[in-house]
Length: 121
Image (tube, rainbow, N blue to C red; front, top):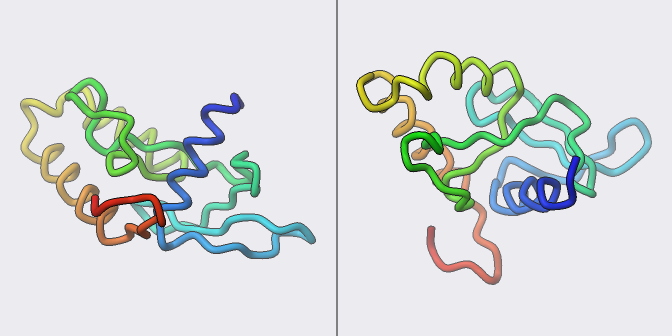
């Protein structure tokens, strides 16, 4: 995994209050929750996923979503792949897809942990 992707994951972790440092098989790592299903996600302190954690673009890039931390979350691979195949391509014409995005954006903001350098999201 590229350095840039690991930095992005660490930025998401830094702003997601479900993530805390924990012991994972004798080494320290980040433990948090999937944005969709709340399954446990393990990520190394270097940003390398230990479990199948993936970067979730809440508002799909195909629908104008950005790389802003407020539009990114971590999701288990199963949830992220399922959302993409079911909803991302149909976002503009599917009311359920838009509702899902609104719900995930609200969940992301509710889980927001303000960094010292941040203004409100």
